[in-house]
Length: 174
Image: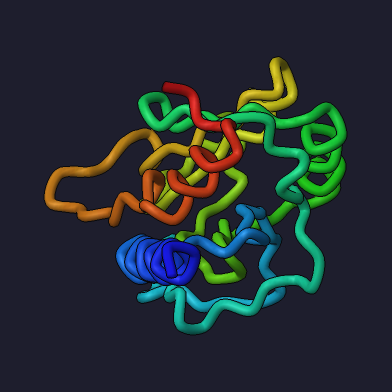
Protein backbone atom coordinates (compact mmCIF):
# COMPACT_ATOMS: atom_id res chain seq x y z
CA UNK A 1 0.00 0.00 0.00
CA UNK A 2 2.80 2.43 0.91
CA UNK A 3 4.52 1.62 -2.36
CA UNK A 4 1.38 2.56 -4.35
CA UNK A 5 0.98 5.83 -2.44
CA UNK A 6 4.66 6.64 -2.98
CA UNK A 7 4.38 5.87 -6.71
CA UNK A 8 1.25 8.04 -7.07
CA UNK A 9 2.93 10.86 -5.15
CA UNK A 10 5.97 10.77 -7.47
CA UNK A 11 3.73 10.79 -10.55
CA UNK A 12 1.66 13.68 -9.18
CA UNK A 13 4.71 15.78 -8.29
CA UNK A 14 6.32 15.09 -11.65
CA UNK A 15 3.12 16.08 -13.46
CA UNK A 16 2.79 19.32 -11.52
CA UNK A 17 6.41 20.23 -12.21
CA UNK A 18 6.11 19.37 -15.90
CA UNK A 19 2.95 21.43 -16.36
CA UNK A 20 4.15 24.36 -14.28
CA UNK A 21 7.49 24.92 -15.94
CA UNK A 22 8.12 26.81 -19.16
CA UNK A 23 9.68 24.36 -21.54
CA UNK A 24 12.63 24.99 -23.80
CA UNK A 25 13.27 22.19 -26.19
CA UNK A 26 16.44 20.27 -25.47
CA UNK A 27 17.56 20.79 -29.04
CA UNK A 28 16.97 24.56 -28.87
CA UNK A 29 19.84 26.59 -30.24
CA UNK A 30 20.76 30.02 -31.46
CA UNK A 31 22.17 30.34 -34.96
CA UNK A 32 23.00 33.12 -37.40
CA UNK A 33 21.91 32.77 -41.03
CA UNK A 34 22.62 34.88 -44.08
CA UNK A 35 19.54 35.99 -45.98
CA UNK A 36 18.68 34.73 -49.45
CA UNK A 37 16.06 37.43 -49.94
CA UNK A 38 14.23 40.19 -48.07
CA UNK A 39 12.58 43.57 -48.52
CA UNK A 40 12.94 46.74 -46.51
CA UNK A 41 9.95 48.47 -44.93
CA UNK A 42 10.38 51.54 -47.15
CA UNK A 43 12.69 53.05 -49.72
CA UNK A 44 15.94 54.53 -48.35
CA UNK A 45 15.64 52.53 -45.16
CA UNK A 46 17.66 49.59 -43.92
CA UNK A 47 14.83 48.30 -41.74
CA UNK A 48 14.14 44.75 -42.88
CA UNK A 49 10.53 43.63 -43.22
CA UNK A 50 10.92 40.35 -41.35
CA UNK A 51 7.77 38.90 -42.94
CA UNK A 52 9.63 38.85 -46.28
CA UNK A 53 12.82 37.14 -45.07
CA UNK A 54 14.09 33.91 -46.58
CA UNK A 55 17.29 32.57 -45.03
CA UNK A 56 19.91 30.35 -46.56
CA UNK A 57 19.49 26.64 -45.79
CA UNK A 58 22.54 26.37 -43.50
CA UNK A 59 23.69 28.74 -40.75
CA UNK A 60 26.78 30.88 -41.19
CA UNK A 61 27.36 30.51 -37.44
CA UNK A 62 26.11 27.33 -35.81
CA UNK A 63 25.29 27.08 -32.13
CA UNK A 64 28.50 25.19 -31.38
CA UNK A 65 30.47 28.20 -32.69
CA UNK A 66 28.85 30.55 -30.17
CA UNK A 67 31.08 30.39 -27.11
CA UNK A 68 29.16 32.91 -25.00
CA UNK A 69 26.79 35.87 -25.02
CA UNK A 70 27.02 38.99 -22.85
CA UNK A 71 23.56 40.61 -22.55
CA UNK A 72 25.05 43.85 -21.14
CA UNK A 73 27.43 44.57 -24.05
CA UNK A 74 25.40 42.58 -26.62
CA UNK A 75 28.55 40.70 -27.62
CA UNK A 76 28.75 37.14 -28.80
CA UNK A 77 32.12 35.47 -28.35
CA UNK A 78 32.51 33.20 -31.36
CA UNK A 79 34.97 30.53 -32.46
CA UNK A 80 37.88 31.19 -34.82
CA UNK A 81 36.01 29.18 -37.46
CA UNK A 82 32.96 31.45 -37.20
CA UNK A 83 35.06 34.65 -37.31
CA UNK A 84 36.81 33.40 -40.47
CA UNK A 85 33.46 32.52 -42.05
CA UNK A 86 32.21 36.07 -41.45
CA UNK A 87 35.32 37.63 -42.99
CA UNK A 88 35.25 35.24 -45.95
CA UNK A 89 31.59 35.99 -46.68
CA UNK A 90 31.76 39.75 -46.15
CA UNK A 91 35.04 40.64 -47.85
CA UNK A 92 33.89 39.17 -51.18
CA UNK A 93 30.84 41.40 -51.39
CA UNK A 94 30.48 45.05 -52.29
CA UNK A 95 26.86 44.97 -51.08
CA UNK A 96 25.63 44.87 -47.52
CA UNK A 97 25.09 41.35 -46.29
CA UNK A 98 21.89 40.79 -44.36
CA UNK A 99 21.54 38.19 -41.62
CA UNK A 100 18.97 36.74 -39.25
CA UNK A 101 19.49 35.44 -35.73
CA UNK A 102 17.27 32.47 -35.05
CA UNK A 103 16.36 30.78 -31.77
CA UNK A 104 14.74 27.35 -31.96
CA UNK A 105 14.53 27.80 -35.73
CA UNK A 106 12.48 31.02 -35.51
CA UNK A 107 13.76 34.43 -36.57
CA UNK A 108 14.29 36.66 -33.54
CA UNK A 109 15.87 39.63 -35.32
CA UNK A 110 17.59 40.66 -38.52
CA UNK A 111 20.46 42.98 -39.34
CA UNK A 112 23.44 43.62 -41.57
CA UNK A 113 27.15 43.04 -41.58
CA UNK A 114 28.03 46.73 -41.84
CA UNK A 115 31.73 47.68 -41.92
CA UNK A 116 32.25 50.93 -40.04
CA UNK A 117 34.32 52.40 -42.88
CA UNK A 118 31.08 52.91 -44.83
CA UNK A 119 30.08 56.54 -44.70
CA UNK A 120 26.35 55.90 -45.06
CA UNK A 121 23.96 55.54 -42.15
CA UNK A 122 21.98 52.47 -41.15
CA UNK A 123 18.66 52.60 -39.33
CA UNK A 124 18.70 48.96 -38.33
CA UNK A 125 20.70 46.36 -36.42
CA UNK A 126 24.29 45.85 -37.54
CA UNK A 127 27.52 43.99 -36.79
CA UNK A 128 30.91 45.28 -37.89
CA UNK A 129 32.64 42.24 -39.46
CA UNK A 130 36.08 43.86 -39.28
CA UNK A 131 35.97 44.45 -35.52
CA UNK A 132 34.76 40.87 -35.06
CA UNK A 133 37.88 39.57 -36.81
CA UNK A 134 40.21 41.14 -34.22
CA UNK A 135 39.09 39.34 -31.07
CA UNK A 136 36.18 37.08 -32.10
CA UNK A 137 33.75 39.36 -30.24
CA UNK A 138 30.74 40.06 -32.39
CA UNK A 139 28.93 43.11 -31.01
CA UNK A 140 25.34 43.58 -32.17
CA UNK A 141 24.55 47.31 -32.41
CA UNK A 142 21.47 49.45 -33.08
CA UNK A 143 21.77 52.01 -35.88
CA UNK A 144 24.91 53.44 -37.41
CA UNK A 145 26.33 55.80 -36.32
CA UNK A 146 23.66 55.46 -33.63
CA UNK A 147 19.88 55.66 -33.40
CA UNK A 148 18.66 58.89 -34.99
CA UNK A 149 16.25 61.17 -33.07
CA UNK A 150 12.67 60.03 -33.55
CA UNK A 151 13.81 56.71 -34.96
CA UNK A 152 12.67 53.49 -33.30
CA UNK A 153 14.71 50.33 -33.82
CA UNK A 154 13.16 47.36 -32.00
CA UNK A 155 15.78 45.99 -29.62
CA UNK A 156 15.44 42.20 -29.66
CA UNK A 157 19.08 41.45 -28.80
CA UNK A 158 18.14 40.16 -25.35
CA UNK A 159 15.04 38.26 -26.43
CA UNK A 160 14.08 35.74 -23.75
CA UNK A 161 14.51 32.81 -26.16
CA UNK A 162 18.15 33.73 -26.76
CA UNK A 163 18.85 34.39 -23.08
CA UNK A 164 17.25 31.14 -21.91
CA UNK A 165 19.10 28.99 -24.44
CA UNK A 166 22.48 30.49 -23.53
CA UNK A 167 21.66 30.29 -19.82
CA UNK A 168 20.61 26.65 -20.15
CA UNK A 169 23.96 25.74 -21.71
CA UNK A 170 26.08 27.92 -19.41
CA UNK A 171 27.03 30.24 -22.28
CA UNK A 172 25.51 33.38 -20.79
CA UNK A 173 27.93 35.90 -19.28
CA UNK A 174 26.46 36.99 -15.95
